[in-house]
Length: 228
Image (cartoon, rainbow, N blue to C red; front, side):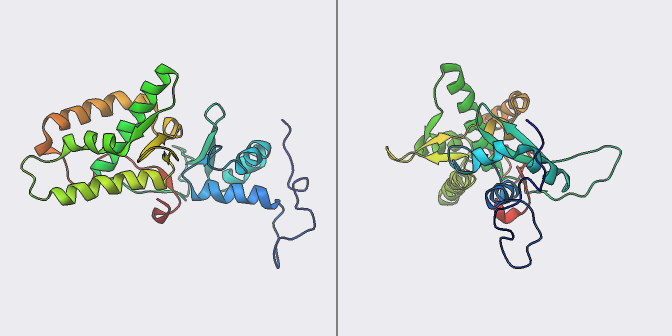
């Protein structure tokens, strides 16, 4: 694929708004904005954006590099996202901020990532119900917990956040059933799974010691905590 210049990508008909000095067409700008909003561009959910991303990958990658961001694409899973560029020898500006996950949110994402692994081994889509997610997270509830309603809200909020981030896709048929997004394979690399699984297994066997708020698992890179 040859690198397309900004002139070649210039929008037909000139500027898109008053005093517009940009050179990218409207659909390319939409992809760029979605990449910055995050967490992903997903071919299933954003079917109109994905072909544009593939078509204009070189110029999108160049524009993101100007912001010290890298473009990560998985063509097999058809998902893409941005990642902060790191250089040990240079102190580069940081655009993306990390918002720590709560313990329950981290435990849920690990569970969903494991469901993807199991589904891949069977050659199936990873589908999970809200009840199954809540049941899994229930093992982390503190012994003699006097505020079960609060824990229930935390569990529900964790599931809802995963859905807002498009990591869970609500299925049209069935009650409260979701497909796990393949994007988790990129956002939650396989090499992290074994160590995290051991840690959470230990915490599950001793729930009284489980932290109530935050753990050491990093959240996804985001240009704004509000975008999470």
